[in-house]
Image (cartoon, helix red, strand yellow):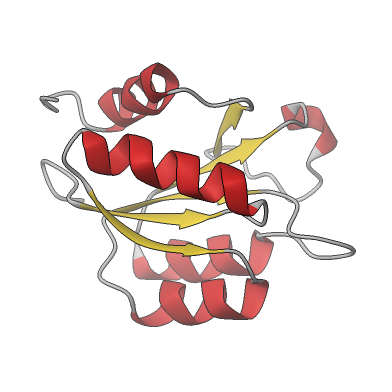
Length: 123
């Protein structure tokens, strides 16, 4: 993990939410990878993208979750945070070290989450 993240990957199937998150992060100086609104695109970017950290929506449509994307990121050693309206105990594939942020997300919540992972972060 780098000392300061630059490239933040967003996986979110709700287009409006995806672009709101993108705008929030870009406004405070980050480069956004994506956003990916479809699972296959997200898996491809997770495999090959220049990513420092990712924000993953849990539910990506009927019978689709971001678990495969999380698995790829985990294999690559890239930290990620699940962003969801679900409670953590409702996510069957959540690992003991996985982080969850409840929707709706605000710029304050995103920055707070980034600061927990990167204590030296300045924004």
